[in-house]
Amino acid sequence: MEQLDWIVIGLYFVLLLGIAAWVMSKKQKDTQDYFLAGRNIGWFIVGASIFASNIGSEHLVGLAGAGADSGMPLAHYELHAWIVLLLGWVFLPFYARSGVFTMPEFLERRYSPKARWFLSILSLVGYILTKVSVSIYAGGIVFQSLLGIDFWTGAILTLVITGIYTVVGGMSAVVYTEALQTFILIGGALAVTFIGLNHEAIGGWSGLREIVGNEHFNMWRPASDPRYPWTGMVFGGAIVGIWYWCTDQYIVQRVLTAKNVKEGRRGAIWGGFLKILPVFLFLVPGMVAFALSKQGVLHYNDANEVLPTMVKTLLPSGIRGLVAAGLLAALMSSLASVFNSCSTLFTIDIYKKIRPGESEKRLLRIGKIATAVIVVLGFAWIPVMKNAPGTLYDYLQSVQSYIAPPITAVFLLGILSKRINARGALTTLYVGFGIGLFRLILDTIVTFNPGHEFTGILGDIIAIPFSHFAIVIFVISLCILVGVSLSSAKPSAKQVEGLALGTLTEEQKADVKNSYSWVDIVSSGLIVVIITAIMLYFTG
Image (cartoon, rainbow, N blue to C red; front, side):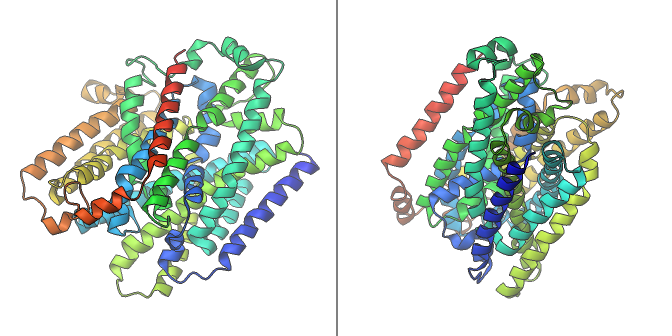
């Protein structure tokens, strides 16, 4: 890194902290201001925030590495823009109508307080052990491989800078800084892709295809493929996608900040357009890195170092600093998002339930303290993450495949059918989570004992690809949810009013109809057309 690079990085962080300071100057009167930015954000900022929240360590460190390692199969996970549309068109009107802050709170409205407690605790633990710790870990890797800063120093810098503006500024600081980071990230990643593709050792798109081979360009692997079967990528990926994009606090909190359902839906549509980009921002640069390594131009020891190594090796001074700032921006925006979501879950779903009489001022203080505690807990998990084998992206997708299916079933059927009840939902959550945890334990045993092999039924279970196992858990969850609900008393009409299809009043139906126009329909259709075209192109 040269002097100009450091100047560019310094200017970026001055601008970032300036935005946070501007937000801090605005009075935060209550929890709605702090956690949902006063529910006053426009569609453009909502969509940019959705995208920036999604683009985190698993993309910068893991997805580019996956592109170098295996090519396009994981593009299935990145073409979930159609699921972002489901958030805006199907789920958001019910969430907005209920007036909730959090997804566990919605489960309480739709089912029971026990369902809220279960999802709150599961979400918090999951965030700390995956999203928080992985983001900090990736920050250390980027600082180390790109800037030459010691891993632990880089991890601490990532924590301190992000923690300060998240704790003090709340959700407003998060969404406005994310809007800035979105465009820096897109510009930086496109620069890496363009310069890499036009390197003399590759010679453009046709040269890339020739060097890496058709297999890298094929996102449709056979159903028998042990790593990325197309059946698992399409159907298992959709199950995980609905959980992530439509029910996870981390993402849904962005659309809840919108002024109204119309702005929230348009934010989701805008986020859907942006979500198409990671295929070209990270997977393609990964394949470029693989091609350059085959030509002897680029050298990396670990797939997780692909993108930082490309930035360091290929880009000229100044642009290198801008792209470095973009990478750090994405890491920090992702981390800031999960900090705020964890704080919201703890304050609203746990602390406020235990101490319902607390003042808004006290809840604000607790929210900031909770964020600080989560920062410390996430950092404490780093040594475990640092020593865990396997690629970052595969690790996250496998864990999510084990925890997502029962949650997807409970939310999806809860909205689509007024007959699903609390007993069915709780049984599904308990059994589905138990099955996923059992598989995760088996995976962990094999991971940390490479020579160990299970036989019999345990061997058959662990041989199932994680994406197929997500389908298995989902089918079991659906059977339990429907079976238990139909064999027990149906919910009262008052409990499900406005929270499930078939319960909307004429006024509520009119509100939904008035919340969109032909522009929203055409824009959504265009996203589906683009996704279909990409899927048809990358067939090897």
